[in-house]
Image (cartoon, rainbow, N blue to C red; front, side, top):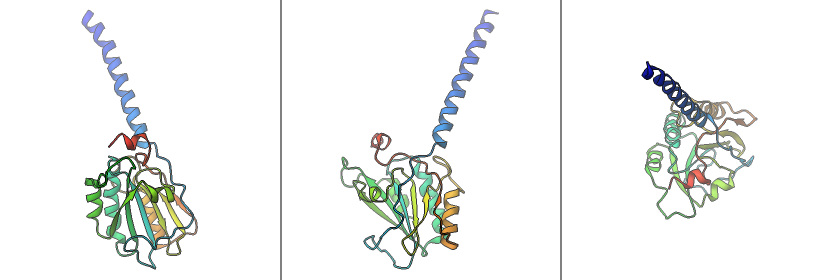
Length: 200
């Protein structure tokens, strides 16, 4: 009898702890990062292998952000539809305190393996800062005229693989451009803050 009385409170406490942990995890996965304060127009002539007359898709990434694995996988799916019709760049931020080559992780290799994608080392995050990117996974789409068309992520939450609002919006803007900028949330680690630095 005493054992049964003792077991019940322990089960209740265990259930509360599990529920709390699950809610914290769910909150983390579904809380977006800071969106880019991107310029309304961009110039890309200095980018490697830039082709005039094509839109430009930029994707900023922290090389050690686990959330970004899903972003790179979703980019591969997206590129299967648009390769050859858009200048696509994945820019891996190399933090100032790190050595050359630090950014060339398995994420770099995954991005490099996607046909039509140019992978760029962004030393000190200079390009990310120019485009106001703050969160790993931030995507920006600029039209042929250099005008911003899309700003956001290509996952619906942290580490989410598969269909997502961002990829759909990019496809829409590439095939039937709207004059307004489409905004969706971006999910990932900070490109420059404590979360990014701690993953070195």
